[in-house]
Image 1 (cartoon, rainbow, N blue to C red):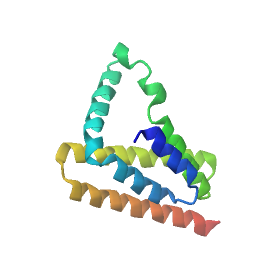
Image 2: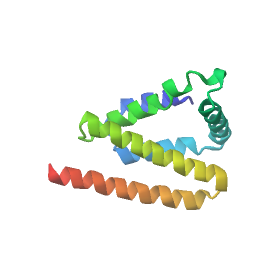
Image 3: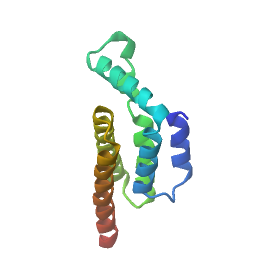
Image 4: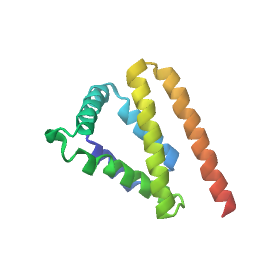
Amino acid sequence: MKTSDKNQEFDADPKRSPTEALRQFWAFQTQPNMVSMARMWIEVFAHAQHRRPHTSSFFETFDKAWTHAFTKIAMSAGDSPAVAKVDACVALAVMRGLYIDFLATGDRAGVDKSKERFMQMYEMLLLSRNNKS
C-alpha cells in the first residue's frame, strides 16, 4: 500500500484520535515488506543530504503527505491549525527516530515500549489541553 493511499484512509476518518493514527502509522511502517523500503528511504535521504542530483526534489515532498494527514487528525481532535502542524511534525519526528532505532537494533519489543511511552505522554498532553478548554 502506498503512503498516499494510507493518507487517504487517515483523511477519511476524522474520528480517529492522533494517537490511534500514530499507532496505525507504526503498524503500517513496521510490516516486514515495509522494512526493506525503509532502508531504501534512509539511503535516498542520505543521498539528498549530499545534494545528489537524482534527489533534487526529495526535500520538497519529504513527509508532506504524512504531515498533512496528521495535522488534519490533530485539528479534528480540537487543535488549532498552527498547533496541529507543530504536533504532527514532532510526532512524526519521534516515530522516524524510533523507526531508525528499530532498523538499527532489530529490538522490536524495546522500541515498541518506547513508542508506547511516547503515546502515553502525547495522550496526557492532549487530555491536559482538553481539560483547559
